[in-house]
Amino acid sequence: MLKLIEKSEKVFNKVVDIQQFISNMFLIFIMSIITFDVLGRNLFNKPLKGTFEMTELGAALLVFFALAITHRRGDHITIDFVVERFSEKSRNIMNGIIEVVIAITLLFMSRHIFDNGLRMMERKTTTTDLALSIHPFLFIITFTLIIFAITAIWKALHYFGLAVNKK
Image 1 (cartoon, rainbow, N blue to C red):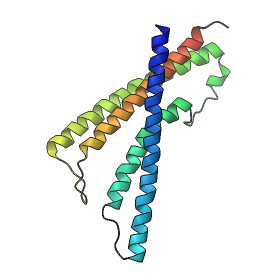
Image 2 (tube, rainbow, N blue to C red; image 1 turned 90 degrees about the vertical axis):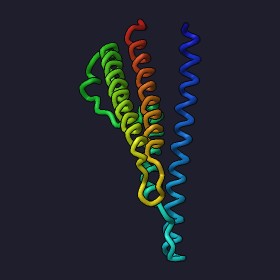
Image 3 (tube, helix red, strand yellow; image 1 turned 180 degrees about the vertical axis):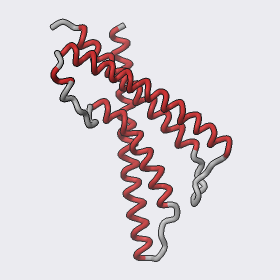
């Protein structure tokens, strides 16, 4: 059973690593279109059509694709001056509970964003300049939030494991 958990965690970590790569690609994409837009506007008096929309959607995807890797590495801002006064076991239990709350919150968020994506799909909502459908972006964001929630669950299990292991 332990090998199955370890193997599934490795596979899941690969998914998170792929998300990080995609996030990096969105950053490069945003930098490129902004550069081409500025060059086109200033040199040829022809700005790139839809730059604002592509930047806006790309930035949203960049952030959501990067959330899971940021959480896995613990790169979020934390304020732990109260928790650090607890014993190590209490700290691990507290951190595990916090991770469970994070996962539950993310699952609720993903459900609402998915429902919003369904509404956008029914209404055929598109962007103004490029007429890009909005709903695929919301479905992608739903997926990234679920991956983020699973990351929080893995971290919770890790913290609870540290709390019950005797040293």
